[in-house]
Image (cartoon, rainbow, N blue to C red; front, side):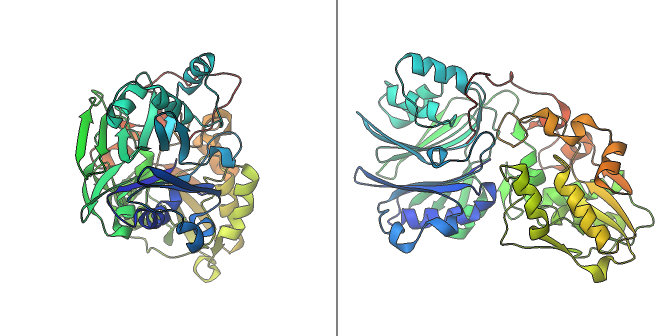
Length: 458
């Protein structure tokens, strides 16, 4: 999962992209990058780490021009290296191409093999690079037609921002897996993974980029739309509503906060906790769900677990040791609230179970008499092939254990997951049109390519 942001037609494009990336930092914390274009001259900054660490005023002054795109990266397989940081930038006989990708291409290894057989040389292990090579080979004249040509036969999830020359191009895959919105800022066009990134720069939301659509913004400010057609059945990622997107965003046309409140209300109906004294959230992604649970259950909502906001998300840490170390650094219980109480702890998901086990231990050490875990999504039983860090089934606690076994392993008195029907019925636009393969095992595509090189997702 990554965050992408792009703007065309503003003299401070790079500075606004920098701001936009701050609002998308939750979508990726391993590396960040910005590319800016002025009169055919392209400059780039890519670095490991957070947006706040890498873009000094001195470095930002090198990024001039009315067109810019940016990326915050969350890798989901292999090593985290500068070679895989985005936006990717290449120079070829037709000029330059810069690309930022959110998603995962399931047949990238096959395409990479074909390109290498034709003489292409790759500089990274990112699946996104196959699109760059195809763009460089495309015969079409217009930038949007070049991208359409490059995407023929590409499978999997992608929301893309591409700069070809002075033209900014945006695209979404036909199944609509990942969000991408279009906004306006005075005379400029702005694209972002989430609406919260439009808010921070003062842009107004125009609409979503449609599944299967390619939009080109020319250097003269013209907008051209090329619709390749959406799939007959969309597969928008329901986990965007459950966990990834910020609650102040709207994705897939619906409010994330309202979706999570509805998930929490449905959870309280399916798995009440009679006899409990209070409910609290595992902050911050579960705050809205806990509020919904409180509304239906009548239990008071307490701030019993405090999050250190200077520590990143534990789930999207690339290694297990990183996730383990951050639990105590990231969270601290409020003993005065928990001591002697029977408590309901609401979280959005349980993936590996290690973070949850550590949190339960903290809550018990703070004096909780009983701990009842409630989860606002179903058990995750299968890998995601479309851009979320669950590549191997044997890493998923619910793939190997019953609910009762999981409760024992994480140390809670009771455990309740929201049902699949409950989740899909609670999110905006549900229950149809969502990908829920990691919960249900119903995959809309064939398994990813398997080969000697393990590609890294964007």
